[in-house]
Each structure stands twice: as structure tokens, then as C-alpha cells.
Image (cartoon, rainbow, N blue to C red; front, side, top):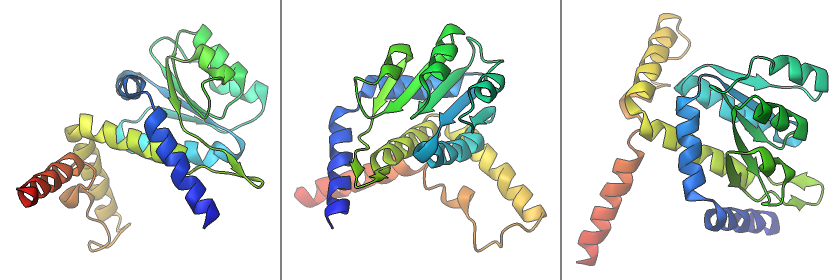
Length: 209
């Protein structure tokens, strides 16, 4: 109970402290960049995996860097340039410095305004991830990443729908899923998110009246 309560507090703190302007800028950068590089190491590697999965579904040209080796990291980033962007989630300083030197857009997801990574960042997105015992709490940064994914879908709904329709066609052709197990395009939960919230607000207003 104490751990879950602490996680709730971290999400509430993130809501208060997230920079809305930086968040919107991050969404635009992700949509407009030619190639997106993702870096998440150690306990934050699952966050990078999660974001990679959805970004690849939404727009493609996503490079997930999964190494703690300095040599391998530079090898995987060697083609980054001013048309690209990099998203760092708990990452080595030198990777961000290198991207910045190449004039790439840098988006950081970190837990402190005092993080040295912010020196190289175009957009700083803060999400608390204090440790409980020996475990990093990833609830708040994961929620922030989820919000980014939803915002991307809402900004480019037709592109997302087209990609999902293509995926569904491939899944059907190769019998990856049964028809009753996947209904992405018909239901479009993310694409209808703003409409659902608007309908709920309207109903609440009518009840108040």
C-alpha cells in the first residue's frame, strides 16, 4: 500500500511539474524528425522498449540503442544529424553531448531539473522516479511516455489509422491474430480519446444543469 501510494504521489508531482510547452515541442519534434534515436539503459531500458514499440507503429525510422558500451553507442549513432532527434531516458552524458554536437534535437525524460543531461536538451520532460528500497519507480515516466504516444496519435490520426489498417491486413493474411482478438482500427481507442473526454464533459455539464 505504501509503495502504490508513493507512486500516486509521483504521478501527481509529475502532472504539476511537467512543462506543457516542452511537451508540445517534443511531440512536434518526434513527428518531424527524419530518424528518432532512443536511448534507455539499465532499469530504464524497458521504458525505451515500450516507446520504441509504439513509435515504430506510428511513424517508423526508429533506432533503439541497447548498449552500455561507449564504442557501440557511438557506432549506432554515427549517422545522426540535424534532421534527426534523440530521446534519452536515463542515459550516458556522452551520448547526449554527441547528438547535440551533431545538431540533432535532444529530448530528455529525467527526474530532475538539475540533471546534467538538460544542458544538451531541446525539451526537458520531468517525471519523478525516486527509489523505493532498491527499486526504481518507473510509474511516472511510463505514464508520461504513454501521454506522449497518445498525443502523437491525436495529432496525426489518419497516419496512425493507415498504419494500423496495414498491420491488421498483414495480421489477417498471416493469421497472426483471430478476428475476435484484435480490433484496433474499428475501435481506435487512442484516436477517439479526445472525443470520449469531450462526451464525458458534456454529460457532466448536463447533469450539473
